Length: 485
Ligand code: 5AD
Ligand code: SF4
Image 1: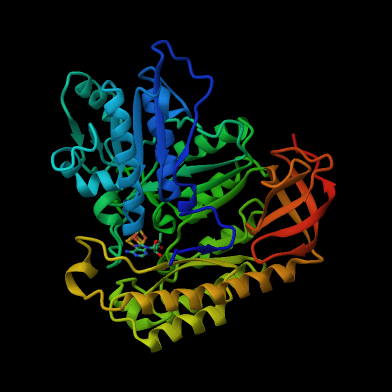
Image 2: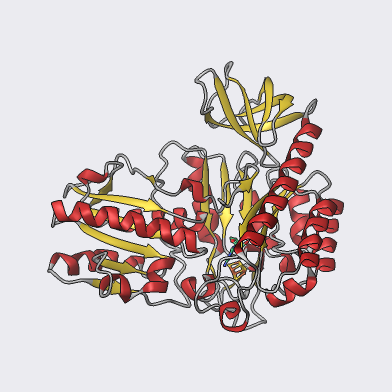
């Protein structure tokens, strides 16, 4: 049974895995070519842009054609077992390519590099370089080490690295929507999650560098940024320290203040964020969203389970009631907000009653869309050490189907409520099906398809919604918004 996501959200989009990215127009005096593939969450895609930037300074340009690469880097994800299996298969393909071209350098980056460390180099002999998420500045050096005939590894995690000063190379040249990383790591220690082990301690990035990166993106024609972090609403920057709060008397910037700062880049730059944690979703963040037209009325708030006892074992730090209170706050403060979520079924000890509670929470909240996963036990996590992965596979599969069916019905119902309304869409490009149609997202992150008419990529249009499916709104342009200068 394949795990699927219902809806139109762009984060955690493993379906983008395998996408090769190209950096065009780079001054490339050496002619060295980098091919980089990213798997897993948006943070990995964003990190790959940091990597491309670091290596561009070392004379590399990127290519979409793996056959012409001098260096192949695979930016990996460990969140579930199936994500790791996909990467392993890909690395085996590249190893075959290296047999034909022994000068090729192959490196593994990201969470799997951190988790599996030397076993990639020594036991499996799959790659030449292993570089964890905090060691990308060292990549030029690691590539040189390999050039001298050795294997290279750097998996040191840092308490300070945020790559704040690095201006990422945008790998989707001419895009309209981009990710901006605002923090790294996670201190939450949810018992099912490998991220605190692979990405280390939480640290926030200097707000002025975030503002500047957003401004540079706007000046380059981008019209939407998604602020990224494992837990964005615990963002906290204090000038007395590099992101770590040591002196509580020194003024800090919190997430609400950061949103306010970034909202002032331009009223025509849409701001989204992902992912937030229910325990840190304070009213001041919601009030800030309500106060700015360009802060999108859309909150992704992973619930994971509807059962308080499962949430306790997951170490999530909130109960079902707390979560529902935060949903009520979103609806009260931002009445038109869309709400989406992540759900894990089949966590250790999940009973039929617990599962029914998840279904009833879905009934209560009616998420616009959800990412839904079967629990996958991860080595070293608290759950692996403390609890038994005791829900049988066929029960996990059945429960997953039940929540997917429910979400599909709610997504369809939600989309039907939009028929007859007019929504503001940022045009992202042609639809997959036809050059006569264009597509984009509205403020609530719904995917909208409409006949092209005079619309241009990167502009805003008002679309009257006439029809829908469970995943797409269909409509017709009624106004092309005049760009503000
Ligand atoms: N098994 C299944 N799903 C997981 N997630 C995180 N760890 C696991 C795991 N071990 C899901 C959570 C999280 C999303 C990014 O991935 O729902 O919010
Ligand atoms: Fe993992 Fe929990 Fe941190 Fe999200 S908040 S990255 S699920 S530990």
